[in-house]
Length: 350
Image (tube, rainbow, N blue to C red; front, side, top):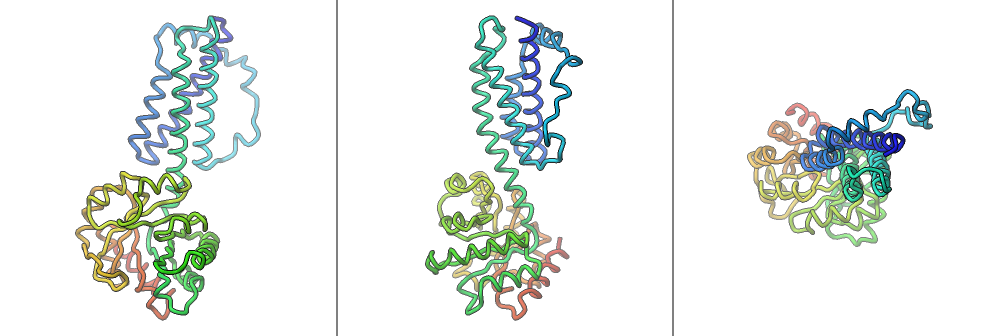
């Protein structure tokens, strides 16, 4: 096999190995995802595995000093890049290298050490892994904002007040997440409300979540969708959502929490912590259940149900990353002030 061909093989094996190792480290260290990490590690080992004699030939063929590609600069290559862009760039880098190796393996007289089918299978596997890794990182940026006060705007509790005005007051009070909850309005009436809230939240750097309604969440380009136990399965909804839209799920048992995490939820709401009038026949599970769920899942936990400025601290102390409230803010004369007091209490408990 000509030295020039060996140099191409060596360069692309190195390129594939470097890119795969970076993706593997992101899956391992950034996402703590054992499954993705193992899949990437397996591909890397399969690609780079070879006998000593073959590797020795490749290494001996290197001529880095006279490589004309060494000094070629690519516009924008040296600039800082966000992690999702790094993922795409390195996944494409590996895919291109694998395609080159695949094609060279088909050329007569190259080497029996290269298996074109192995490179093809790895390339197609990486297409799926790239999608999963990018999706997880994009959603991770949003779930990192699930901290402090998660305010739920229930249309039926607003009276004559405007959704938008209430949202503005909540944001002024320091809320980081706003959920739109509406069990009765027609979808045609609800969509423009959701779109207005999304616009406001985007401008203020606040997450906007839609409760229950997949179609409204999609049409309004919400940051996320929240489901209950009686809604469609998390695993099904996860496939229908854009890769950067987060998905939350309400639970009241440890088993439900574990299932939600396994099926693709990005955060879990546990409740009810205390008796509440915001829901009909709430099942009060208490702080003990919050502690139990905290012990078995790694997702952000949002505690819900009867939480106010007087008990937010103890909820925080028992493992909640955020507290969801409805009446404690919507029922207050000064919504912004009520929100600030709950946040102060919650932070004291943390």
